[in-house]
Amino acid sequence: MKKYLSENSSNKLALPVFFLILFLAVIAFLPSFTSSFHLDDYNQIVNANLENISPAKIIKSYPATRWLVFLSLKANATIHGYDVFGYHLVNFILHLISVFLVFKITELLFFFIRKNYPAAVFFLSPKLAALFAAAVFAVHPLQSQPVIYITQRLMLSASLCYLLAMFSLARGYLPGKSKFAGWIGAVAAFLIGAFCKEIIVTLPVILILLSWIFLQPPDFKSWTKKNWFLTIGLSIFIIAIPAVIFMNIIKWDFHQLRHAWNSMGGALYVNTPGLNRYTYVLTQAKVLLKYIGLFFFPIGFQIDPDVKLCASWFSPAFLLSSFTIFFLLVIAWFLRKIAPLILWGLLFYFIVMLPQSSIIPTPDLMFEHRAYLGVAGLIWAFLGIVCLFTRYVHYKSVKFFIRSCAVVLILFLALLTYNRSTAWKTELSLWADAYSKSPKKSRVVNNYVNALLNNNDESNAIIILEKKLNSSESVPPFLITTLANIYARNNELEKAYKLYFQSLKADYTNPETRYNLALISHARGDHKKALYHARTLWKLYPENADTYYLLGVIHAPYENEFTAATNCLSVSLNKDPDGENAASAKTLMKMLIKSKEKKK
Image (cartoon, rainbow, N blue to C red; front, side, top):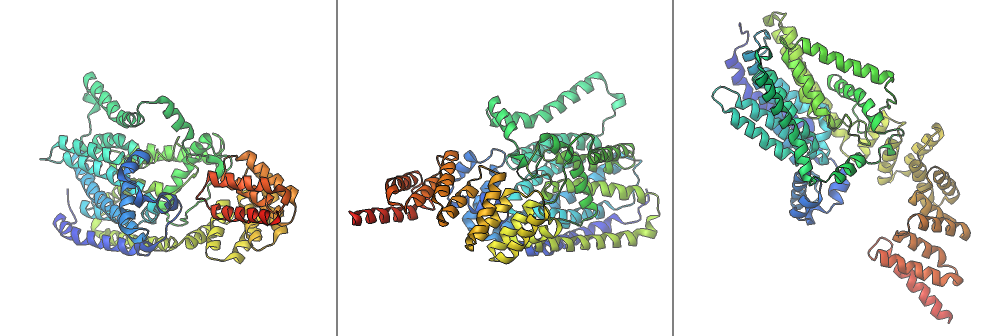
């Protein structure tokens, strides 16, 4: 085959170009190194007191499939405290290692294509194609969320193990290398990844496909029954490994398995009314294509995308999305002999996305970090498309054009990632960006308002909340409560009371709303209503120390309710002696007792 580009010259360029890619990644993510904590970071890191938890306790008490990552977060907390730079640096290093692995795997894929697919003629340099793949994986804005969002070190770590296993296996099939050592390395990477995040569960399937498509494509026509029996048996065994490991972790307790399955995903309906396992599965067909759309048309990124549910099998969005996925895979199958990268890339993408975009639901329909590893598959599919089209043109005449387009594209992607890194700088900038793109989504409105309030910008928070309440027929009670809290802090008790009452109609059991309604009734001098709301709260949450404190405060001003007041305050202190209201409860009790003694 004629080579229009010298492999030697490509090899000489590879190292400096790769370091240039790393430098470009540093620039693209530079604003993020001082980005604040976000979302789950507060529960998992800031409020978790990780630096004071022993490694043994983390291994025992944290999820069995994630404790290894939390050990690394503990190390960060011990060394850096809550200085975000150290956390971001570790995340970024993990990302760069994955970039290197994508480079090496791509290089190996091209080697095996040339070896096993003589019909797949292409004029791209494998080295330059691998550098392009690494560059896109490094700086594509779809990768920004898992790199910047500290808690998603879970995704970064599991993805690194995933890629490491693939690299180990592919390298083992090179001439002069040990296949056995390759499989051992892949298994070792899989076992490490099993303690990082659950997405590793699909790795055995990917390893089998990698072996069949590239490393040692089987000649099915010449197979005997023995070949089929051994292959199917071995495949089932490999695929069953994750299930066996998981069952061993839960000690083969089927009751625990059933409980885990039923509770998986938490309260799905919290953020999206109508969301359940059924509607989640239907909607994911559309979501999978949305990730592909963001890959090829990288605009419209945001932390909380507004995705409409597919409510039935006959939903046009579900039918069209399912047909599109099926059509893509069929086309890729027919092109497998001349463009195997397309089939491989699409299969890789859809399979690695299965744990989070299939039958296992979560309260969030779409999160950009879920596509982190899948991006590698989309890059390989794109390279397959490029190889397919360049076989029909004279490479020499378009060589400069293709290179120029690749460079411009990578620089453009890096610029977009830089902008996303800037958006993630603070809670306020992140949610302001989300609000500008999804102003009607209630959770976005609520989080943006909270960010404004944390920055002492009550005026804009009120404007946004009132706009939401006036423009929407159905407003979640938590938004109404947030606005009522602002009015209550500003001593606009009548406005606050009406809004709390409105919120209570939508959610009778909301403790915050009921608590604040009791306090406002007490402040307005309506003792009867204050007691009614406080006692209702006690019936709903009889073990809550704050409820007893509230009852004590309401009883306190009335001489004939002295015993009730002191009893309630005592119970509050007994239940939570170091709680937020403990000091106030002690002071109020002393005042009541002192006042009683004076009157005697």
